[in-house]
Amino acid sequence: MMAAVAPSDRPAAVVARRLYRGLGLVALVLVVGTVGYVMLGFPLIDAAYQAVTTVTTIGFREVVPFGTSEKIFTMVYALTGVGAILYTLTTLLETLVEGHLGDLWGRRRMERDIDRLTGHTIVCGWGRVGRAASHQMAKAGQRVVVVDLSADRLSDCPYPHIHGDATLDQVLRRAGIERARTLVAAVENDATSVYVVLSARVLAPGLTVIARSRTDDGTKKLERAGADRVVNPQRIGGDRIAAFALQPHVVDFLDVAMRDSGVEFRMEEVTVGPGSALAGRTVRDTRSKEGGGALLLALRGPDGAFQTNPASGTVISPGDVVIVVGTGEQVAQVRSDAAVRR
Image (cartoon, rainbow, N blue to C red):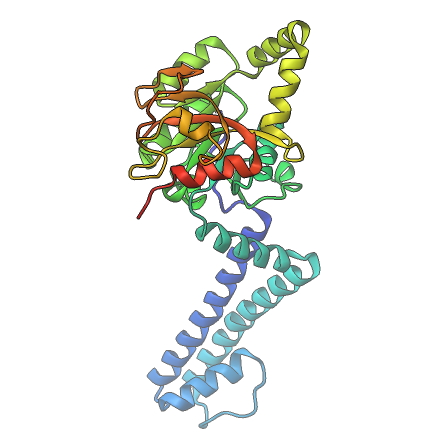
């Protein structure tokens, strides 16, 4: 289970917290000094002037002649105020020398970028599976936000990222879960993945949640927790080994068609929108030159059932998912025809 580490426990955030604390302390000292001198009978502007010159050790002169009360208050105030000033200056100097200020500004800029994202994918876990999934999605043009508990692992992450515990609601909110399209739970163990899935499902009921599982029992628990898809890398690895042993050319073709953007043919899925040009047409129409010429391999209806190699007279309905193979231009034509018409 991930330890409940607060999102602010990062070096840049710790320094920022110390800076804010120091600046707040300086402001408080100036207010206390001003109020104190006003209570001693100083006019407001003179009281503020005396407080600033005292706490900054400038000490031009006393605004009015000091009596015993004024002298005692000024001595106590000077010792307290100088300490606050020195603490703030030391923190600022440490920030500049150690380079945390750049990290802090970079973090703020990254958080603003994340706040502007919509329809992105949140990848929880920057391990081998999370890295591979992130790279593949980014390659396909999908925007990615990574969440991980380890600052060391995130040091080489090229995508916007959040350092924190993905099981915590506030961390997922910082990653923009309410605006995200998909969440991938690729954390260290199945128990943590269950927590991530439960949190994601509560915060964003319409989110597509994909989880990595290490065991068959974990797969069942993740499905019950609300994961839309559960992937077991060990099982998939075994299946691919067997597929390479039995039908290596088929596997190579599928890999190239789905992942290699440099090849002529692509295999993609397209959802048919209501009112689109593709809704109500037949499979034969999509295969014609006027329909783009793409090869429609399968249809999947809203009930989840597949129709593989559908008959040419099969009518395509709104909400269907069509799996097509064709050139980039042909697939783009199908996407255009399937888009919702406004």
